[in-house]
Image (cartoon, rainbow, N blue to C red; front, side):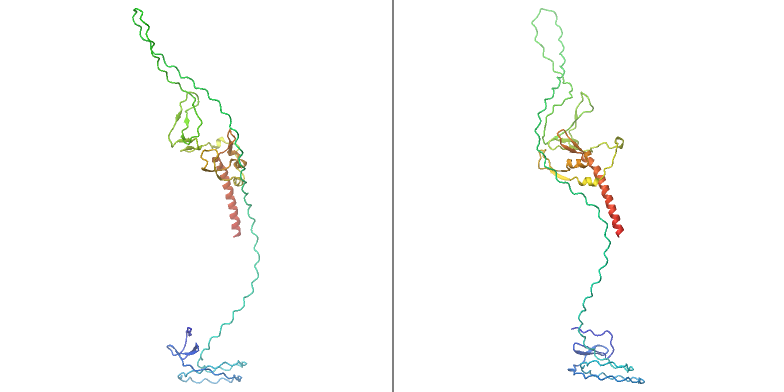
Length: 342
């Protein structure tokens, strides 16, 4: 095992380790010869009364250190006598071997539990649970009878009569000449009617426009794919510009802010679905259920002549704006509660 000598020593200091005696000669530790087994130590006599301290003699020169004898077994400790005067210090004996470490003391008892902290503030009420799913749609009603055919457009104006030939000189009455060819039919006049047929073709169609109301209007159409188109199969209406609606306060009256917007929004589901009324029954769409919206915000729900509900998706932004403001107010209140507890 490694030797841990003292860090400060003087010449002739001794150290006992690994059953051997070591001595410091001023330069290094030297191992002294093994003195052999140590005999038993005699019993220690009682300590005599301490005499008076004599005058200290002058220090003699130090002799060479003799070999150290073996260390006897230590006898029982006698009763301690009164302390005598300090004699001249002898040379330091060899250090005994280190005793074994004592057993570890038992663990101390657990300290008393600290007082309970104050109860936290009651949390805000949880949001209303999601609304149950919509019931299955009823069977489709029988198809109505076909409408009557529209009135036929008016006949175009008759072309002008051809010019009459010049009269010949009066001679004998000749045979009657052949009838001249009929003049060309004049161009048809303008019409306000368009012959239309029902179609569900998956193709691009272009809306027709007129410049003003009234009869004899010239129809116009823009056939550029980047303008304004309609797909009869999907029902998609595409415009490359913005779809703009009036929103000026000058045309509005009895204005009311939407209340409990967050609670109302929680009752509307955002869903994906397949349209059963279109040719493509595999394509998924995203949106809301009109009946769910109608229960909390009927102002954005309409109905067509067949009883099908419609939703003005752009107008739903009003509900979203007020819901975000209510949610932000809740966040600020929670922040204040947390800061008060810090």
